[in-house]
Image (cartoon, rainbow, N blue to C red; front, side, top):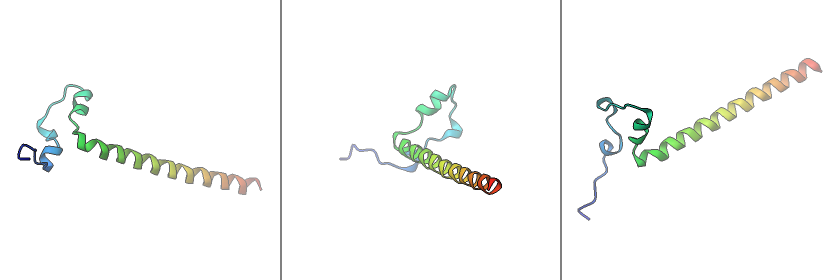
Length: 70
């Protein structure tokens, strides 16, 4: 068990300021495996928030059209 790497914040989060990337692909390859789930979760949360806000806007628009026509 002594061969296991200790996980520290420095080992999970790359030091982006001191790295140079030639392409976006190089940057994406630098994202650690452990951080991938967090990125997916943030994306899902953003999509859910966007859909909720869009539904509210559509509902307000439908109500205002009903009130103006009726």
